[in-house]
Length: 372
Image 1 (cartoon, rainbow, N blue to C red):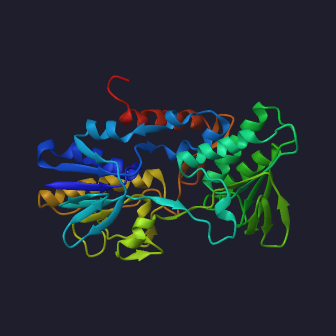
Image 2: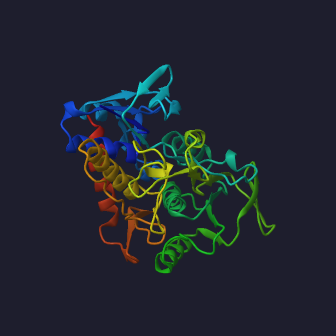
């Protein structure tokens, strides 16, 4: 029997590792497919901007992971899936499957704002490096202005790292703007977290603009929805994600491209196809899963258990979201090796940054060779 996993991000990697922990190697062949050769620890991408980490520090070789887990890695993009014939087409290969996991992730969304697509992002490692290179080209001895669009988790972390970048270079004339269409910083989190971060950043000279969206962007010139305008030297866009282009072409039931799953994480109408991570629309009993690493990994483990249960002809496990849109939790870095843990409405600062770096280091060991 064969399991094919499309996408080697947090969700896809987790399902492979979990299956290998539950079944003997000779009972299930695994094929992992991704056009990237390295898994990217996306939560650390903002630290590329400050120079705290290098690309090789926060990415890992997918081939090493696949070899450790007795899987075959196909370093190609998936073009189509024939759900009736149970075949995935990747490049010139047609790969049959008995079980399929779609974990194709998401991409930045620009909400149709003219010029937004010309902004810098940190969604992928290559984009984060591109933004860092642009940052390095700025003359920090002049009145540099940078706008971060979107004050969600990523936007806040980007601001923290930009602060560190300019502080290290003693760039006293540098100005950072954080622009958010909602009425507060970190709009999905409790007010105590939002107010703490806002007060911290404003104390460091960051100008925070809320309740104003972006109308258009033209070569650093930003027009806001209230008609006000801002000229900047660089714009970094951190306003969320949309489904990958692959998800839209598969013909599965979806919500704005996110593939709808049942209570067992299977695509509607496809009993041997699981969808997890950012590719999935997971809503169980009215509770909506968040798009975050914790959910991706939890979904990966549940999908793995259900694949094993199908093989063993046992009842499937019902999924229970853990990090939801209504009760989000996270470790949020704020620059200066500071961070806060947000859990059940509480905010914890003690050892938060060290904990996040420990998690990062431990996770990436999966992609290091045994000799390293």
